[in-house]
Amino acid sequence: MVVQRRSRVENIPVYSRSDVENLIAANNEPDWLRDHRLAAWETYENTPMPGREEEWRRTDYSHIRWADASSVVTPNGAVAADVPQKNLEPLIGDKQGGLLVFVDGKLVHNEVADELVSQGIIFKDLRTAVSEDPEIVREFLMTQAVKPTDGKFAALNGALWDHGILLYVPKNKVAELPLHAVIYNTQSGGHLAHVLVVVEENAQATVQVDYASADSETQSSYIGATELIVGDAANLRYVALQEWNRQTYEFSHQRAMVGESANLDWVIGNMGTRLTKAFIEVDIVGSGANGRVSGFFFADKNQFFDLDTQQNHNAPLTTSDLLFKGAAKDQARTLWQGMIKSLPQMQKIDGYQVCRNLVLSHEARMDSIPGLEIEADDVMCSHAATFGTLEEELLFYLMARGIPRPEAQLMVIDGFFDELLQRIPFERVRERLHAEIEAKILG
Image (cartoon, rainbow, N blue to C red; front, side):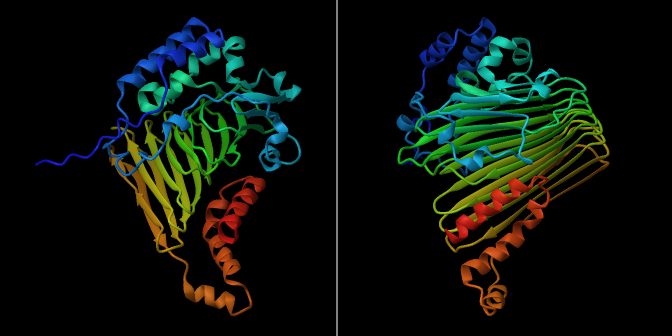
């Protein structure tokens, strides 16, 4: 008798082609977008749910109740005032170049500084951009960075994204003030958003995107895509902070394309969700380009974070620098899989990746799998993964000086994360990540 494992294919999101057609009709979308959505849907239908592939075989999503997590969400009147104030605060100082706020997929706040508009900088919701700036959206939407063929959930996003963000900075323009977008959900169900950032040649921008949701007892899903396209000699600083509630399951594809002599500084913070499966990729496609990624994650209770990073050196004389730091407590689990790749003849590259892990309970589990795939012979590439626990001797030293154990633990954990936090050039982001550490340690 042969025993076979039950396939996870049966546990799929509850969507149909008619959902795609209804979305197209409701927004009176142009033919090119209609064709794009339907082609993505065909790819989605023809792509099996992930199962035993290397990047998925450690991720169990069989407990998702898709009947709840993929139900259609209808805005119920929630406004920007329903969003926590910390998610609305400017990234730097008291001013920002623009603020977009979405609640349950509906744009509820929209402001852009006149000085940016006068330069031709576009910062608006993606749905409006389809009609007002079709040539830009058509050129870049899922054509260079994230593509529907990247996976089952990438195809689903391509077919059914219903809200999103477009930032377009023309050649030689600088967005002096940072731009800020907030995606907040008050209702359970399926949420599909798309972020498209295009910084043309010799242009510059700083962007923060906040993802958060109100507490709920019903499961939700976030099927997301983020595309960062950094032109030659351009400079992009991009911050993404995720604080979904504990009933949300995130499946996202995030990819940056970095052109010749360009610079990308990407900060990622993962704090929320019940389960996160995120593909985070930097494609360095121009000589002399530099990509830096700084990732923070802290899992507790029954959370599971699965972060899959990739640094692709597709041009010579390029550098990439990835540092992830994370902690886990209670029964939480984390998994980081990293890879540095270089194509043949891509000489003089310098790739660095490391993931440092702090295990805070006997029941928690953290796994890190670094990797190199190098097809050139004149390179400097290194990778590492480290694991540690709180040293009782150090805790005893602090407690012997009158510091309660939880606060002593917080001090040591702050020290562990300090290396990462110092890479973040924004004080308010550092403060928010520190507050998240404190909340998870002290309650």
